[in-house]
Length: 506
Image (cartoon, rainbow, N blue to C red; front, side, top):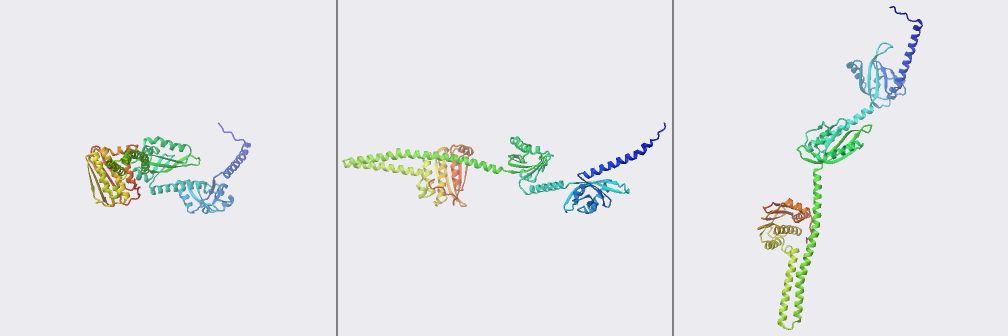
């Protein structure tokens, strides 16, 4: 088969059509390059600019492409030696290189650019030139720099603070824990590769669902702050009460990408709050009990004054009136003697009531004499043997200290007389290191101290709490040792110079 010759007319028309198509293609290419949002340029091996687009000129602050083409690339680099990095990159990679460089604008401001360059053949003279695409990545570099500085600050803060600092990468689900965690919770792991799951395993099972629900609720609603209190397991298996708070970092689309925060161990604070709450409940119970005791004392005094003193006075009055009417001297004398006897009984009853309220011995003769009188009186009523060991040798003490000591001893002795079923009671008064010491010891049936304290807090018998409050009021210490079947020992230490003076008639 023979190949036909081409049509002469077609032969003469094709070059013109190809030339037009080439010109159109070049025109479109120039327009595309000129409209491109990124910088595009060609340069010689020695750094002379051949062509550039408007985006390249605007990026470097030049008014026009012509102005840019008048400078050399060496004048654009912040560090002229960076040009050597491109040459070295080409030597390593061959025909292309991708670098991040610092360039200078005409206003002196430095920008970061990403340069993707490759070697091309210059059709004009057959030499090799570089064609490069340039993107301004200054904003990205600033964000990265701020992020690095933020991370570095976080690490420094984590080392400097006693708090347990944490950083949760939400995208990778990696939870980083600062050194404070190892110190505070005695944990060996500095980073939880399993992310939030590893942390959740250490949250107390009874708190876990509530804490996780609150955390994901904040993330799901686009919130920025989260905080909660929960129990966190230490390395030794015990639980700490903690206060945890975190700050959510979001990306440009307001999506959470990271969360940083810190944990405080508030175990001691919660314990103190619980103690304060219990103390307030005890004070409330004591206040209520005080009102009840006051009413009981008023009823007792009213009954004694009416039934005993009132009747004796009435009988004395009637006797003296009868003596006044008597005509016989013998009868008059007998009635007067009976009246005087009734008055003596009345005086004895009034004195007894006064001693019940506050023994005058405490004011007149001191603490040891008042305690001896009260011990002997209770021992006679309850049937136990009592012994007082006075190491103070009758020395007088500040009035508020004597009053507090007597009231505490009085309460302890009363409890022994009412409940202990003891055979022997010993009271020791002494002084040591500027403190008044009181010891009340019996060989009775004893009791469970914690059960008694709990019963008192619930509004039961408040003798034990009353002693504790009296001692605490003057800055002293009280200790009660007892167990069923082994008797009871009450030890009290009171500063001889009290910070707070209770009323003398307490």
